[in-house]
Length: 262
Image (cartoon, rainbow, N blue to C red; front, side, top):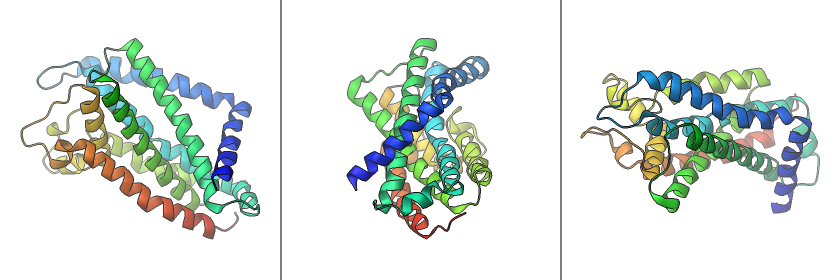
């Protein structure tokens, strides 16, 4: 099982030699996101109670990047299904779970590489920096990585459940991208309308962003009546990520075993 997983992961990395533009995207995309949000939008936004907006923003950008891994995972999985790659894997004497596990492991490592590039750009181009030491900083990135892994498995399940990469893109991006805004990603959730704020407060993305801000020591304006998920952000983020993994890993494996050729 472990050996099969590493073989499949290596196959995913070898794809970068044929498609170097994907690796270039990992390096260019962070700079675009930082310039767009930190400099263009940030110039018009003031935090309640003061504080540097770029320091407040960067954990939200990190989270959004990891959340959107679900879109790439869904498209990649659906593409493998339509091209018959997964069907060929299923005909080989390898562990069934290793196909998805190896592919998703490679996907996670690539996304972590992109996250590292974004953090480096943030350090160079903005006033963002972690302030609570190496252990807390590592814990913050670990929570972001765990959330990204959970979203990869969500995307994998969607990719196995739809009929084409185009539909996989639409079925993932259409709800995921708005959800990254319906959170405390770019502005504090306290300013949302009362009927909308509970959705944002209980959004797993809000908990992950709040946890990262706390562990990085970045500004996180909160009101005295902050909802429970944001008062216990680290625990809530961990619970959401593990819960999504416990739900979607078996669902994806089951769907993989039952999926018919396309």
